[in-house]
Length: 298
Image (cartoon, rainbow, N blue to C red; front, side):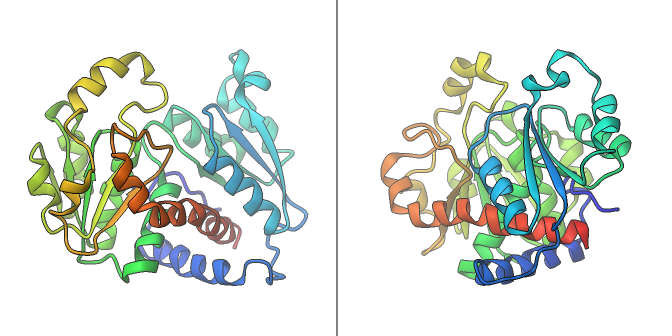
């Protein structure tokens, strides 16, 4: 049985397969009779709000022939304190797979263990593998193989998105630079565990120099709202703007996993100049997640 719980646990072969099949599914959308989820019911169990993740998974499941059941954690017994292992053992007898968006990575892993059905991590505080797969697919769609390239992440380098980028860099052979204040850099032991070419620095300009991709995310992630004032103060200088883009390689891509807070992690002019890439990246969540679903049931 397959699960997608983290980038760290994925093999290079599986990543390559998912990315290659994403292109096929995108090209064939609307024409394909391939329905690997026909007769299946998949639950979307979300403890965190969502636009792109929810819509792309619901549409993707239905396009692959399945039925999607959206379960807000506050509307089921999880919201009243039922242990995730008990919820998993119930749902595992009724549904065929689960997509989970929550806080603790351990919740996704426990669900997979106790439900004994294919389980997909649609975001936890530790990782966001579906996002990074879509990001890499978008880069390769526009610029060819990411192997040997330089990706620069700007902002909160210790949150789930850069953590998944770290594991992807080690597996796919590209250099990842994380430009962040010292307090917002990823744990040294995690970087060491991942291996690969990972550079963590407070020097934003050095990190951007010659980069093939500049990438950012919100400064205040879900669950961190109480830290908003301090985070904005400390991260204030770590913005993707037109001056920073000029330091990157000519033609460098700019990406944002959205939602974007213009004037904070990215300025308005830079966002709009690179909107085509950013919204292609958002659309590609659908195609990549369909590929993930196809892979996980094959």
